[in-house]
Length: 87
Image (cartoon, rainbow, N blue to C red; front, side):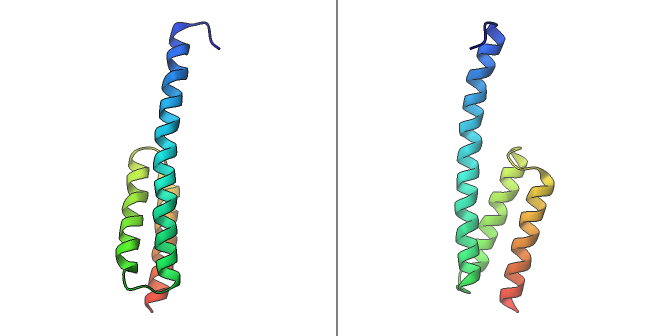
């Protein structure tokens, strides 16, 4: 444990931020899995699922949980899979 007061506060804040980021990432993984499953089985609601997933990825990027290039790559790959399934 740190001895300096500011570092003690940073430990608490770091734990709080970690939990927040973990919650966002967990939700993101769930939404992306649902979208991938909808694309794979060519479900009727796949466009809606992809839209929700893209929105979640963009939101995670804006919150600083994902790097902008990572978010762009994930969105691009999902769009490519969805377009391939539509064709």
